[in-house]
Image (cartoon, rainbow, N blue to C red):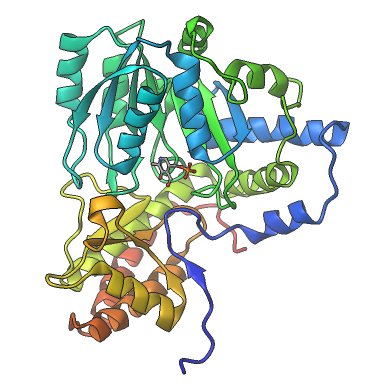
Length: 395
Ligand SMILES: Cc1ncc(COP(=O)(O)O)c(C=O)c1O
């Protein structure tokens, strides 16, 4: 008997929700064809622009993030088009599967799991194998905990007037500095159950003028995930079909909070948690899975030699109610992943590292209790002491 056990999510989606916004949303009766709701929608779209850091129009759909990914392929590409896909994990592979589903020919630049896509190789392919209708990549590849240099890629793709850059930032938004307008990120995709601190159910995408023009030419079939139709409706505070009303109200609440603390604060928070987790892992003689460019969104850690990561995950779950993620596909059993995106704070960090130390000892990886926590505490202090005073308030 371990006493009271609270279930807590440390997974890279769904993530802990910002309850204040949830409560407000579920306790309201709403109808979407009312002026009240239109006002909420208009303000939410503006707040999304702030969250994305863009002046571009942003569309949203009642779906998981993959809906907006599918929409990006369907709205931008025609059957037979060629696209360039940078893939470094399970979500990069999703771009390839989507291209295939829409009869689009994908040239891929593939990196082994744990390594980022080579931007040099993307450049070579752009020069050698184009023209491409679009380039697809992840800002952060959640399955491996690696981030990509989308700024460099943006500056390369901007040189090709016929090619748009599509960034799956489903775990990049709110964890990583992204500047769609400055860097030429034509389509940037996000989802609600990530740094947006909400339950699953909403996907959003910002779209540049260059991408809107490309969409006018696409001949692929589309109906629900029609970006242009949604843009037209959202401009009036409407959505084409019944919106997920309570999620939209919740999004309005969360984004207001994010605006209050500052987008940069949210990103710096994830960066601090990720850095502290990496330092703690090192102190606990654990190897990071990302060979380079580790993401702020999630840290993937290799299971100690001879141990299945599932044993650690099970111990954390049964002993502490802490839910962390296993590896996906062939990475299952080899790594475990701790999330930093959204509504996590320093106490969550110290607690999960302390719990991890106990779990590691229980499954046979002997570590000195407190050694990881100490590394996390020291890294926390380094970040916080060097940071500008921020506007964050306790909630
Ligand atoms: C980078 C990335 N892309 C795409 C997805 C798919 O999003 P969803 O599960 O919301 O469809 C995820 C989900 O974890 C993700 O992390």
